[in-house]
Amino acid sequence: MPPALAFTIGDPAGVGPELAVSAARDPRVRRCCRPLLVGSRAVFAQAGWTSALCPVLDLGPAGPFPKGRSCAEGGRLSYAAVLEAVRLAAKGLVEGLVTAPISKEAWRLAGAKHLDHTELLQDLTGTPRVAMMLTAHAPGPSAAVPLRAVLATRHLPLARVPSALNYESLRDAAVLAEEALRSHLGIRRPRLALCALNPHAGENGLLGHEEERVLKPALARLRKEGLRLEGPVPADAAWAAHRAGRYDALVCLYHDQALIPLKLAAGYSIVNWTLGLPFARTSPGHGTAFDIAWKRRADASGMIAAALLAARRPFSA
Image 1 (cartoon, rainbow, N blue to C red):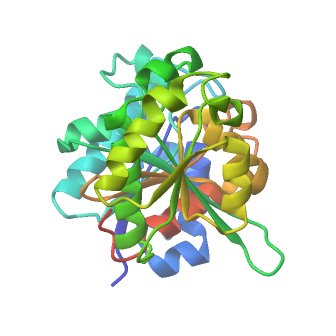
Image 2 (cartoon, one colour):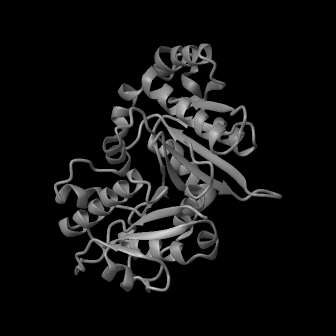
């Protein structure tokens, strides 16, 4: 029997409800999993859901929500949907979560303790180490080229990234990526590359010291521990080599080092995959898109790709 997956509503003022319903309706998704929509029945109905499509776990309220902007009511609903989906996963009633985009501002307005999915899921499950991997498929000459990047830091202001880089952050990202590629995607000996922080990998300290003081010592330790990891490689060269098939994934040091190349190559079909959790959790690699919400312009390709990845077995990352 295909796995049951909880599709959370995301922010009801954004594209989340439309994405969840569109993904649940997609024939490829329906062949590989059993969707359960978690959120507001009334909001899902506005997005085109009917009882013939799939079940809904109705948490209410029905709204109304101001469309296209963050509000506390929307934050409370999207936060409650994630809490309920995790409860279902903990009880074994679903095998994974496919989460629609949330608004960090709405969660803050709602008084939530956490402001993003990754930290919330880590806390709720008591998971010691998690990492954020972005995956996509870029067009190739004969077949789609898989692109993958795991982040050593997540949602940080760029000015704080250098001080957040250390052996532990690099180890967690690289080790969890290697385990996921091996156990979930069947890559027996994953080839990873660590992106440099500075232009030209710092030019031996002329353009920055992070490569010499942080990245290279961490790499030496990780290699001694048996990890197959090259670097530090200048980020532009690393992405070119990755697209050419030299690496199975890149370890990127900050958010935009991963997201800009991926979005240029794959558009809205990017998937955010949380590594290290006891169950599958994926989501589209974009935000709430308030500017196009509820205008029938939302692109569900990322949500569909997220569902297809979460439904893959075995899921032991």
